[in-house]
Amino acid sequence: MGKIAFVFSGQGDQYPGMGKELAEKYAAAEAVFAACDAIRPGTSAQCFAGSEEELKETRNTQPCLFATELAAASVLMDKGVVPDAAAGFSLGEVAAAAACGLFDMETGFRLVCRRGELMQREAEKQDTSMAAVVKLTEEQVREICGRHEEVYPVNFNCPGQVTVSGLSSQMAGFFEDVKAAGGRAIPLKVKGAFHSPFMRKAADDFAEALAQAEIRENTIPLYSNMTAGLYAGNAAELLSGQIFSPVLWEKIIRNMIKGGVDTFIEIGPGKTLCNMIRRISSDVTAVSVTEYLSEVEAC
Image 1 (cartoon, rainbow, N blue to C red):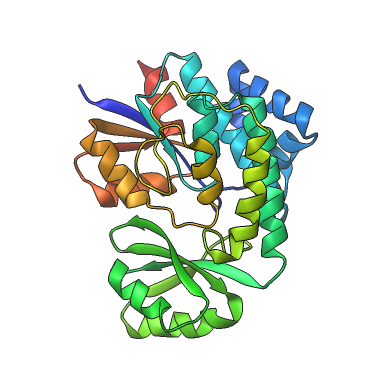
Image 2 (image 1 turned 90 degrees about the vertical axis):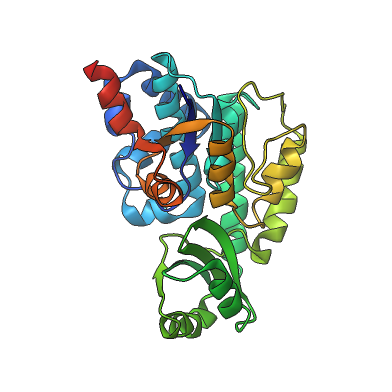
């Protein structure tokens, strides 16, 4: 029998009402939202009733997604579903770190609140944005980015999909070059050029926050966005550095599969990671947490 991995989603999957059904149905989820509200009043209200525009603000998106994801993970663990490994996409890596025991939930929530504030601060300094490029190879996207001084390939998601970050003023020209090459560029629901040099100051300041946090040895194997390998005593460096470094998602998933994982449960409000994983390998199972809970409860 293969192994199970929890994969925690990143920004872009948020939507008004996320987590509400979980909190109403499961005591474990309700407890997580209550703990987050005690630290940052109004978090659950933003998740359950906030507008799409409100949830798009990075300082709101990150704590709200963290709360929703930890609530979902807590429900699964409360039912005895403990992963053999975990990873998180960008913001999701902080949630994954908390689930893996790198720090407690409250510490993780305080950290993600600070992370969201820092990344929004840097995003507001310049007009930047992100887009997913599909139907082109990684090499093609790198070559097109090279024609535009401040557009960077940042997230290597799956075959035929790479995310870029850059100055909004350069995106129109970049989009034209992508179209001319036979690809398509899709703007993302984020405000900022994440995982690019634009975020270096946010990463440096987040490293200071991590230095003040109690970080422990994780009890569940955790994969890094920066290296695509396992954490090994370098948590603060990996969590701060990933803010301005590319996310090596396809490599992470391939390494997890090599390590024996054949079932991936997406911990988050959407199915973005499931779709990526299915494109990476047709030999594994990828399901959303909602789907998995339905299967567990039907047994």
